[in-house]
Image (cartoon, rainbow, N blue to C red):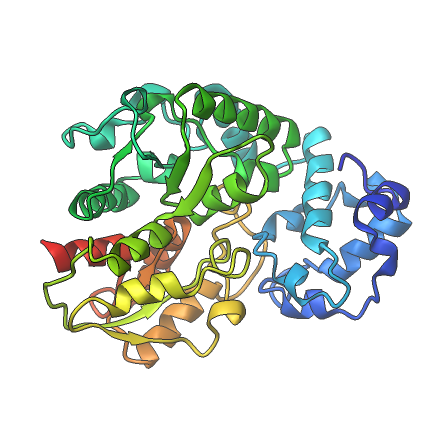
Length: 375
């Protein structure tokens, strides 16, 4: 994936069968606001050399939501072309400073947020959690954003409370945990991703980890679909808690009289077909009325948080998709936007502020709603 010449990309992704029908660009959530065009980039990968990408700053607009891949009638992967083009930009040092800082921090500190590894487990200081060295049925892989971001730390704490209430036997890696690398690969830094993958697989094996549960769909996706040599089963927390609910181990008894609408995360829904478990958890809370967007499940609209966009300011103009989704939620009468992804949490909270709907609608992770139903 180091070049975009027609031969190498054509051999790897069979781009020569592309119909140039434009469904990929037509379905891209950024194409109407950015110069981003998956159809055009596929053609460029076949016809031109690496120089064609060097002035394309807008390639960082891509959220790697993979809608282009899902809509392609030939089952091609335009998103991988964009990731490959980003790899060239990285090699030529043509990347935004914020992206470079995130990549350097991941290499040095094991996270893209510029935080010290020694502070990774501070969020859990008062929770008395087991260490992976003690052994447990599940390794709770917290992830970088829940470990370091003050708002999302509450999601990790809420999830711990729900795990305990449901009798989940789990442990954490603490300060030994490193970035999963999902966003690193999508920013085009393949070498760093491979290093993270090797390090993580080694530590999982050293502790005999057989089952991993994640907060983030991004961590879930990369462990389940892209990690070579990983033998452990991987679960997103909504899958595990739905199982506990079905088995009668998770008891939701307290009423929450709220109208809740759910935002499907791209890396959980579109890319891994996990649609029903989050909805079942929400609708099982007494008193909750679950609403649906017009565009939901496979048709859900990306929040614009993935693909490294947390560290790269978009060149796209106009209203962000998360802002549009907030307006839609308010119009439907929702009081809470429920999310199941750290990036969705941050982008939607920002969108609520940008649209002026603070005090009218809240953004909560499903784990936070569950805590209210059990405590």
